[in-house]
Each structure stands twice: as C-alpha cells, then as structure tokens.
Length: 357
Image (cartoon, rainbow, N blue to C red; front, side):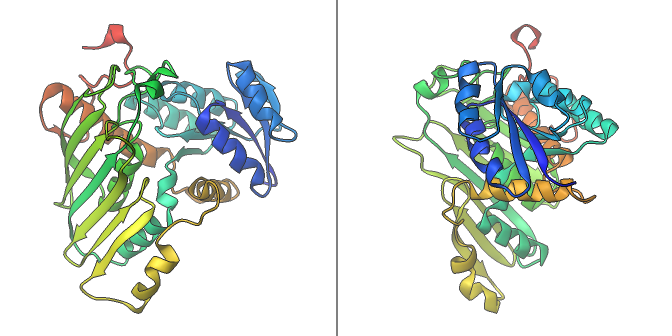
C-alpha cells in the first residue's frame, strides 16, 4: 500500500496526542488537521510539517491523498463522522468509544463493510506491556478458570474539567465515568474474560454539576461462570488514585495497577515457569517513550491496512464493550439485571433530551 496519508478530525487534547504520534510512524503522513475551531486546527497543523489546517471536513476526507481518517472528536459525533469518512472510501480510526448508541455503531460497521474500508477503535491499553503479558498467560491457560475479574478506576476530575468543554458530562455527546473514563478498563475486562451474560449496575452524580453519573458500580456475570466487578468514579480526592485490572483464577492471580493498567503488581501462579523470574523486568511497565501504547496501536492498525488480516481492535471489538456499557446504563435506569444481547430502551447514552424516556 505504500505510505498512508491521514486526516485528523478533532484538534483538542487527544487529537494533539495523535498528531505527535502519527508523523513519527514509518510510511505515514499527516496531511490535514481539521477542527471547527480554526485556531485549534492551525495551531496543531503548525507543529507538523506538510500538514494543512482546515475547518472543512469534506476537504480533508475528499483529498485523494488521504487514505485513513483519525477521529478525535466528542463521542457523540463519532458515528456520523466515521460514516462520512467510510462513504468517501477512507479507512476509519475512532477514539473510544466507537459510538454512543448501538444502532449507530451497527450502521457504521455496515457502512465500512459495504465500502470495503477497515474500521478501528482506539483502546490503546490493550497494548500495555503488563496487559499483553497477562493476555499471553491467559491464552496459554495459566490462570485456569477465572472466577473473578475486577476493575477500579478511581480518578479525580474537577468541575473545571467538565466546564471547559460543553459536551463533557452530557448524555447526548459524552456519557459519564462509565463511558468516558472507565471504558478502557471495561474493554480490558471483557477482552480477558469473554462474553458477558448479564450486568447489574448502580450510578449517581456525587460531586459534579453534570447530567451523567460521576460514580458507578457494576456487577457482571460472564458466560464462563465468572464474575466481574467495576468500581468507577471521577470524585477521588484529592488526586487520581488508580486505574487497575485484576484477574483471579484457579491457577493463579495477576493484578495490574497504575493509572491506566500499566504497572504490574502481582504475578503469581500455582505452577511457576522460568520466564516468571523476569516478567517484572521485561513486562512490568511500559517504556517511558511518549504515547507508547498509542504508537503500538497505530503500528498494529497500519500493519492491518497493509495486509488482509483482521485488526485487534476492529469495529466488532469496539461494539462488544459498547453493548456492555449500554446494558450498564439500561440497568441503572431500570434498576434491573440486564441480559445480553438486548435492545436499549431506557439507556440515555447518545439520546437527545427530547427523545429520552
């Protein structure tokens, strides 16, 4: 396929991170920085040689040199922008989540399939070195039956954080802590433990003036018989505490802590192997380089674009965690256990105010 030309849609904080990583990748050119706020687009484009600033999305994705579009906009716009890019014949890379509503996600996946373009969802924590080590242990059946998996996202967000962008903490454009901050960790839990049978959840707004929840707890029942527990809040005081993942199996225990499941804490098995002696040195933390896991995500996505293999984080994978998150909100609204697969009826996520039940 040769070099890949990218257009970046959305020049906020996360778009700026992508803009630092993309130009440093082999055989990649960042050709456009697009944002409805021209000053944002111009500031970002000025930092990348050969990059053009524009507020015109059609111009950016319509350029024949552009083969892939990276979407780093508010969550509620992901599906529409993804379909616009796919209809133009461009490969689509979307920051989490894939969409807010399941019907939107399904239309986007169908559009990409119909146009013959690939779709990726950025869940970069799957590429963390401790997470990759855990996945390999899982695939070699070292943990045996996993009876419990836990996720804890105990982060601190001020009211100013929500106030600086009007879409944050809204149902129509963002969702709450379970959609925004905890979605990476929920994705990891599902990736490790498999299909979810049901969820039972509670959530409420504790400290912030926002529409959505800033604190939530979830009990998942997996089809393998195991349980999953999610604790998530943006009310931790006075600073971020942890973003962890832990699996407890009949054959061993692995606990990964840190801010974003990036610091191996426990690696203990009933049947030790020689490689266990060096696991903390080799896989205990990510390298210190900027955006290591984002870079690993992009390298995998680009390799997928240059071949016929399926990507680790395609649209189907993105939909799996989105369905669980929709079920979580359905449970919060109904007060009932929700069984998957299901059709959302009371979930507010991605629904304009006038259409909410």
